[in-house]
Structure formats: structure tokens, C-alpha cells
Image (cartoon, rainbow, N blue to C red; front, side, top):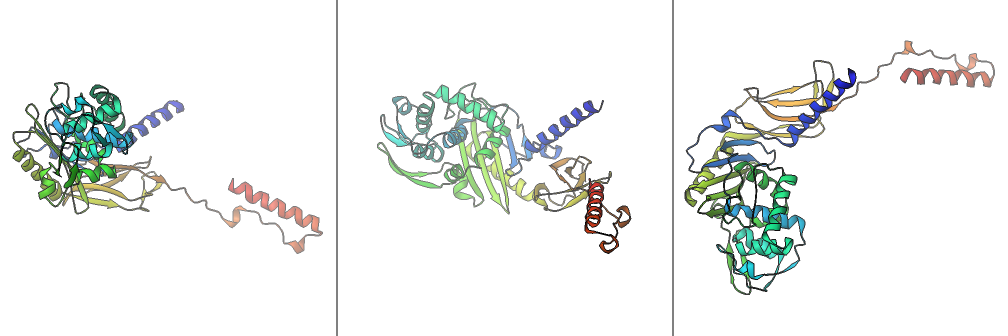
Length: 381
């Protein structure tokens, strides 16, 4: 019976840890209706991964060029950026926005990633895919493996590296927020998507590239990342913005126009920044449970809560700290470290040997001291 109870405890601990690793939250307050034009949207706190607002965030939709976020992070993390890519004829024939690559042109992989993200070059996406996997189809398989196994998406499937329409090329607002959260941890990716302009010198095109994400050029808080459009997807937009120490990820899908996509995004940014704030529980804080155990926090905890909201901190006998809001809904969990109980000793509990001068002969003195240390050791065992 004890073994069964132990296994149940392990299962419960595993599930609790899963909540920490995958902090998906969808609260009733986050499903409130805003006058959005986009059919799906989500606002996520980048650091914690907590969802602050959503509209149809699990509905599968067509992503268009925000697909390139995945193409870029796969290439950045899995390839040598100094590789020289030979552009194939297939890459030069891709329709849509381009950086006008020429067949057999030699371009570094890093430069292709820059053209992919800053100017939304479809030809750059195909060139990257063929270089790394031999074809768009094989590269799409790696994209799917990456987002499922590494990032943990559930409703996403890619069939190409650029986002041109395919009925099986789908994602959700929530999955794209998770993907973006992962990608923005990479310093190079963050640098590229935050680049406002870049001189482009190629065999077929010399120009200055201006980032296609309009808010990066007009909103001081925006730090990236990517826009998209095909007829079937409508206007899609992924944005990160940082203010007062909080960085948000905003995803909007299927807006009827680019203006509406940007309008929705700015409204959602304001909701996140105006209605939420960060809170902290600091390292060294100790908590006592009803069972008399004491637990300690080994590092600072950062969490996000609604402004003016009162929170409560609860710790159970397993050392699980739960931070709840006023509606008793979980906004953060953390496993604390058990503080070992101090061992109390009393003089009466140890028999003290006679003083040395009371003992006849050095051999007897050695015996009594040895016996005393033995008692002392037994007491602390």
C-alpha cells in the first residue's frame, strides 16, 4: 500500500512540474470580447508564457509569411551561418515578395535569413530550404519536427518555408505565440527581426531593405517580428513589444486589411501594458505549512497579475507554492526547497566523562574520552 501511495505522489509531482514547464493559462477574463477585426488573436507575456488575452487562439488558420519565423530559427540553430548557398533555379521562380536572387548566385546563409525576415523574401526561404534539406518538402518535415518536439506546438503543420498558400499549411494564434517566444530567446534572431533597415547588395538587386513590420518603424515599444498576407489567410501579424520591464507577444490572424491588423495589435498591446503588471517574490523568502514544514525560495519569482489585483500565496506540504488571484485562479506555481529541521541538543542528554585529573593513568583517560565521543556520536546518528 505504501508503494502505491509513493507512485501516486510521483505522478502528482510530475503533473505539477508539467504545469510549470507549460504555463498555459486561459482565464475567463482573457476571453472577453474586444472590438477586434482579426478572427483570432492572443496576447502572451513573453517571459512567463502566460496568456493574458485570447480570441479563438486554438483555431487552425493559414499563417502566410509569419511562417518565416520558423524557417529562420531552424536555420539559425541548425546550420552554419557562414555557409555559402548556391541559389537554384527553383528558388528564383518562387512567386510573391522577393529579394530578387539570381540562379547560381552565391549568397551567405546569414544574408538569406536577413532577406527572409526583413524583406519577407520568398526566394530566400526556398533557397534556405533547398540548401539545408534538399527540397521544400523535406525542410517542411524538419520545421514540423522542430516546432512539435522542441517548442511543443499541437495544432501546427507546415508544408513550405515561406507561407504561400497550401490547405494543409496551418497554425494557431497560440502556437505562433509559443514559437515566437522560443525564437526571441535567440539573440541573433532577435537582432534581425528588430532591424529597421539594411543595405542589400546582390547580383540582381541593390537597395535598402526596410522592415515590412510597420510598427517597428512607428512604435517605440515594438521590438519585432513579422507580418504576412495571402488571399486565403488575410493579414497576419506577429509582434513583440517591451515597456516597463514587461515584454508582450501579440499575434493576430486573418484581419481584413493590414491597417486593421496593426490597429488590433496596438489595441492588444495597450490592453497588456495597461491592465497587467509584474510582481515578485524574492529569494530567501520562507513559508511554513500547516504540517509544520518550512520551505525556502532559492531564487526570485517573477509573475504577471492584473493591476490593482490582490494575490495570495499558498504552500502545501509538498513544497508547491501557488500564487492565486482574487478568483482563486492560479497565475503561477513554483516548487520550493525544504528547509531541514535543526537538531536540538541538551546537556542532560549526554553523559559527560569524569575530568582527566580524576582518572588514574593516561590509558584510563584515553578510554574515558573515547567512550564520551562514542556517546556523542551515537546521539547525533
